[in-house]
Amino acid sequence: MKTKLHLLYGGKSAEHQVSLQTALAVTKALDTEKFDVYPLYITEQGEWRSGDLLSGPAENVQQLKLEDGGTTIAPLALPSAEKGLQQETVVFPLLHGPNGEDGTVQGMLELLNLPYVGNGVLASSAGMDKVIMKNLFAQAGLPQVGYVHFLRSEWEKAADATYVKVEEELGFPCFVKPANLGSSVGISKCKNREELATAFREAFAYDRKIIVEQGLEGAREIEIGVLGNDNPECSVVGEIAPKKEFYDYKAKYEDGDTAMIIPAEVEEGIYEQVREMAITAFKAIDSSGLVRADFFLTKEGKLYINEVNTMPGFTPFSMFPLLWQHTDVSYPELIEKLVKYAQERHAEKQKIKHTF
Image (cartoon, rainbow, N blue to C red; front, side, top):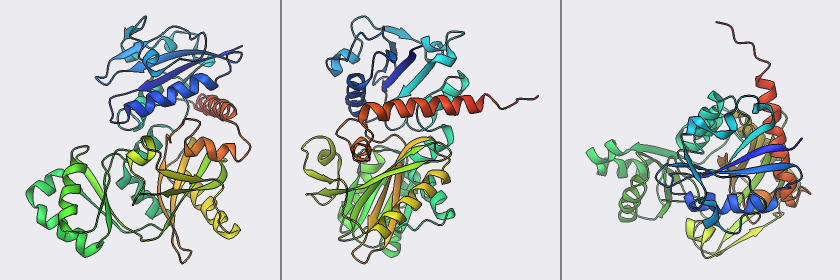
């Protein structure tokens, strides 16, 4: 029996276009002998549109917007929630950022009792909020660079005090980021007070909470893929080598001004440290399905975890799929594995006895 797979993409976050590109790539990789694929598009205004069974890969992102033939639906009336279809239906959220990658959609799918690809509510929300994530990593004993965080209300009341705290506790250079966003949106590197003030304004345009992280001059950016549920496995490691000062949104998605080195040249001992730390991070936020774990490796060989991404970039040319391609797992195979992990996790949840 084919699996009925609903691709859920788009969304209200600043990463809407990234999600569309990901969905387009997935439609081209899916085996229609194994999957009946149905599109579910969330517009930038938050409207949900359901599409008919795809007869083949989507031709472009415009087609995936379902402006012709799409049906506007209420999220709690998903076509995948029809009685009797739950066991053969899987939802594949391809959403990045808030209102999709942060546990909100995952919670809705839990209420609908539908299996879905990727991380659950807790891991998604903790992985989205960089402050909460780093606090959990600290409790798990994972080494990290110094960081501080602020609410917009704190900054508005005493901006100079927030800048002084950064200067005294972290110094320059430092990185200012929205706490709940990905794809390097709203991130700035700061070398002085003036740049710091500008960066705060930029980051607070995207979130009510920001995080400021200590910069490490000359550190390498190392990444690894983690895949599985209770017994996760790791890919080879890759390295981001941006030609700019740091790996910002434009370098990621627009000008291609970045080199991805896979596999990265690291000693076996360093690889083992990366692998062990990635699995510790995976378990620290109770992940399932997949994460990409990002690290800094200093010239002295010191390793720091930066963050995990619970829904990493997922086009065939993104780091996560490429890491697995170099670990002998092709893009179509990777998708099938993730669907299988979703079904396994859902089946495990059905064993729980609910007593009231």
